[in-house]
Image (cartoon, rainbow, N blue to C red; front, side):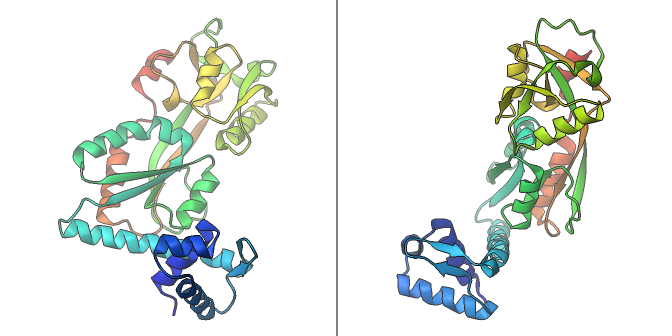
Length: 299
């Protein structure tokens, strides 16, 4: 039967890319480390690592086992954290995963409120460019809770948070009337686009395709927060989550027609422990999907 120690050894070898470095990090001898990895391979019924002259490489079986090993280690750490918290020894740690845009806009005020209520709890934040990457990381046990688009075919608990609204960021000299701007009317305009791999790139392409055109790219950015700033600098139109529009925004903000929206949810692999459940409840109460300053800019 595989043990947590064997899982830890496997994950450390993979993360360091070397039996030697893994043994140093784990404070064990290299023969002892190799023995435990071989014992794990015997337990699962096949080789997990291919030992190359200067590196190690996961076998197909190893690639299948690794996410479960990470998840088992994460679950064990959460168990220890809950036990320490129940014993009054520490506040524990909450591991939170999200996509870049949510980390920029929605989470900061929520995390501020959480910190005030639970100053002894450490927060570890992991951010991903795409919701599929977020889902994969959550499935692999890299976080206690994920915040992003509701994942398809997810077997664990999902808590709906509402709908995130997207707005158009326009240059300051724009003469767009107040109210809504038809996306189709922007077919011949230059656009501030997102780099491939950013989930917002797919969302922008889909919204423009529905309006009957492909956006003409003036510039692509890897940083979601840069999009409204580039629009305000006159480089093009940007479609951005309302939550990332800066408070002191120098351009114009308008609603697109038809509306562009994205559902948001918090989800876990299993029934959340008390610490995670408390955070999800606070998130559901505190998450502001349309900030007041954006409401004022749209009025």
